[in-house]
Length: 309
Ligand code: ATP
Image 1 (cartoon, helix red, strand yellow):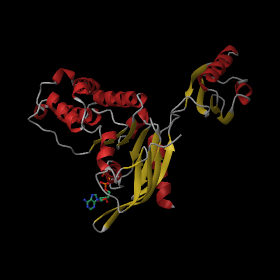
Image 2 (cartoon, protein in one colour):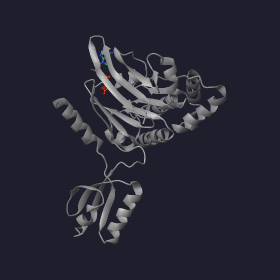
Image 3 (cartoon, helix red, strand yellow):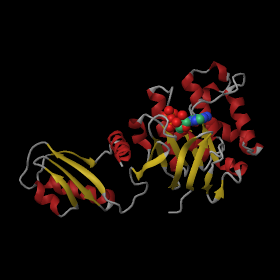
Image 4 (cartoon, protein in one colour):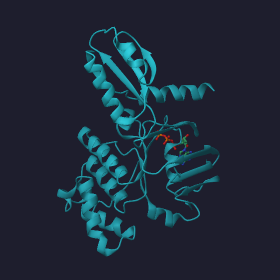
């Protein structure tokens, strides 16, 4: 697949301090990349470079083939950005904030009202259109800022710690919103320290530490592909045919008397027929499903490995 974003040998320096050391990465369209790393790793710096707000010392970033630092205005039409600390015009109402941003993004007047209604609905602020931004709680301000960032339905959405200040329900709403936007074709890069949440919606994880990429991996397949899925199967009690039944079903990674992990291809159909065979053969299947990737464990392991090498 052709990448939407290409970062090539990106070096960024603050006066007297190199914050990004020759970073290269590609981001595929319609993916959600979790940008993670310890405090001071360079996440905000990288997001600001991706948003064409910081010119790099060397290297380049292209968005859909466009050199973003060569053409920042054009690239801003294609991207939305929410910084970790942002300001709102407190005296404007929610509707006025969205209108201002729609105008700033150059939306046609004909499309403007629909865009405002869509963005307000997406961030669940439709019932507060008349309230002043300065009267909103922290979480509601966060939602309005996200609404502003997506009003022009950008190809690339960059969010720096968007979940901070949101209550648990709003965090779940944010996760669902990001998934919906991705389904609509948007490509999203989101930084956060809350790995359990990123796990719920991210398709890729980009780990940086000390201004360098430590790992960049797909967390789960973004399309119904022939890639194997790792299944975790658990029995409520041992059954003599467990191993025999699984042997030819895929690559058996690990098996005990009552649990197994197995890589299986063929999508949901092959999983469904395997489950049926196990149940028909009288196996007491207690749980059966794709193994959950534990982002927190993977993250800590990679960061430690990166520091040792
Ligand atoms: P956090 O998780 O704490 O938000 P981060 O991964 O977003 O951290 P950055 O804010 O990108 O990290 O900072 C990367 C490095 O650059 C840090 O060492 C930081 O101290 C340094 N840095 C950031 N802003 C400046 C600045 N304006 N001048 C000099 N150094 C800076």
